[in-house]
Amino acid sequence: MLSTLLDKFKNSFPEVNRIQLKNMFVLLICILDKETVCLYKLKKHVPVILGNTQSEGYAHYKRLLRTVDFWSGGDLWENLLLMVMGLLNHQVKYLLLDGTKWEMGSIKFHFMTLCAVYRGVSIPIYWIDLKKKGHSSQKERKQLLERALRLYRLEGKTLIADREYIGLEWFGYLVEHDIDFIVRLKKNVYRSYIDQSVGDAYSKMEKRALKRKHGVGKTVTIQGRGYRFVIVKNGQPNAEEPLLYLLSTLEKKHVISQAYQMRWLIEVCFYHLKSNGFQLENLAVKQGERTRLMMAIAVLAYVLAVHEGLKKLKDVRTKHHKDYGEFPEVSVFRSGLDTLAIKVREIVLFLDYLINQIRKQMDGYRSKKCICSNFVQ
Image (cartoon, rainbow, N blue to C red):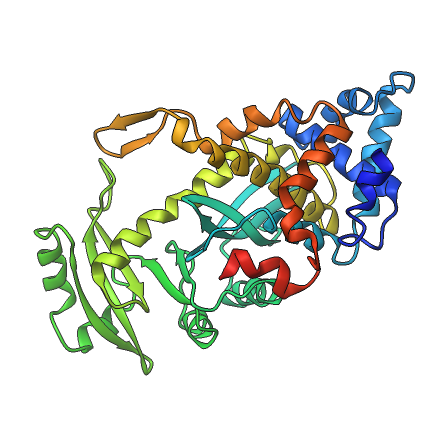
């Protein structure tokens, strides 16, 4: 039975054999059940999944290490990522870009991550490890998008990002690839261009924005390109900065200001991947392909939880907060993760579940067009 189920994934991973596939799924199940990516902590759960109580814990730890080492080359982690996207079948309009960083001893992790807003949830679709503390460069952002564009059709989407992700070369790159953007600016950034453009001066716009619910905006020209500059009141309670400064390729100021509010969804995603989910900061493998693989497996676990949580979203009770409005009593992620607890008790049960979830996307799923069609339309 297990061999038959594993064979159904061979079209997606033709380079690997059944044993290697089995070990990868064992690792995934361990992460889902124990909610950590620390291999040393996961080793005790391997015999439960495999029904092998004879081997010692160290042997199971070596199994997990071999899994990571084998899957450390080529584009295997991207193939796994594409399988993740096969679970998403609703339209995506907005993209988010941000980074999450931490240190493990002398090793610095900085995952600059591109996410899609999928039914109100942020889903990682590509990332690179910058291996440093500081901000990303425009060159590094372009490199990320170039790689993502090989897998997905992102044209016509709108990218939302915070103040770190500015730069005229970067903005031009997005425009050239037909990707709209909404990016927050620091106060006074590009002020000279804004003052030179037709309309109210920068200082007058600030004064007017403080009195208007939906803020103020005007079209500005920066190095020959036209953008929309919007200033709107900061909706966060007790915010240190009373105003938000936004630059966008979109036209309508209320669309720009409202869409920018979705940026916090990527912070929620990082929260679930880390402290509230899979303890990503405990990642203790060498940087490079190994970290990309472990990140891809963690993302698959995250998407599976979200996928299950969205099924029962309408049944989840909501709470009302005076500042943030209504929100689910239990997050989509946590709700789905609790549901998955029943499905990860053994590998055969889990694989049968997974195949059923992605059956419609399995045919030709190595094809860029087929695997991404539902996701990016």
